[in-house]
Figure (cartoon, rainbow, N blue to C red):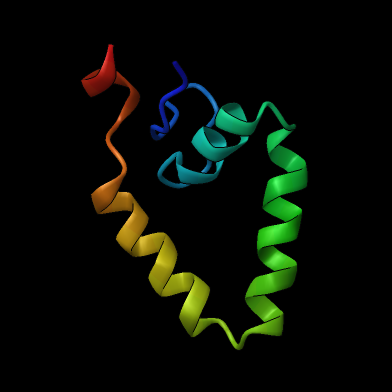
Length: 65
């Protein structure tokens, strides 16, 4: 069973996007580029807030295994 977690090995800031990329088995660079484009399109606040909330909600990889 797949589990969503913040990646320890594939992280730039907090590992949220790296963990999402590993969950969906997609290259993290693609997810990061998509996130940055959507960040500018939405005016920063909604996705920035979602990222900060995800840092606290999604467990770290070490806590899962």
